[in-house]
Image 1 (cartoon, rainbow, N blue to C red):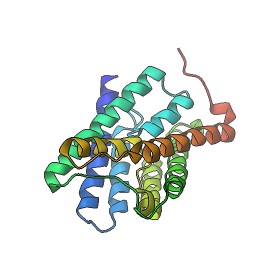
Image 2: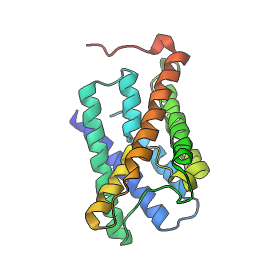
Image 3: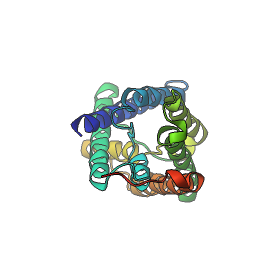
Image 4: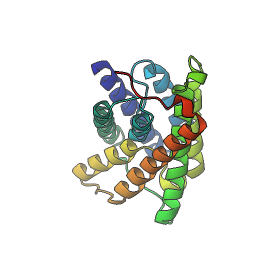
Length: 219
């Protein structure tokens, strides 16, 4: 289990680190860089931990019965820890705290209408390319997952902030609160409710798509 938790922490760390350095640095085509980083980390850790790097994905895996409740909780804890450490690193490197937040012009409904569907798309892709026996052994799972995040960030990032991941929302918010940048209370609404609802819907649709594959954990 230790190797799985270390992998989840490392993968989440590099995802959030990339998000922070590219967005605060004004890097052109940041969604491409972020999606590529996730793709690389998925290939790095997929065979070890399943490469969730996202509590919403872990929730879907729990609903998919691919992980136990205790292991899912441990995954989420280290994912948040990885995100916090990455946000600290970003603050040191950029001398500015990473704040994941929606557009000031966006309404709560608009933010959720980005976070829920694109998290849904991300999780449904993960479930289909990384957990179905029909696609077992494929070599494209990392590409599919990374490109889904790229699409979501490019299409809706300027509206919702493009988190699609509770760790991405909460980690920087915690560091911001500690460093005096303030804590965005709407993080809990937008980046917890949105992604977790999207993940739940994705797990349900996967079960509709593949009822014979929704199996219990053995043992």
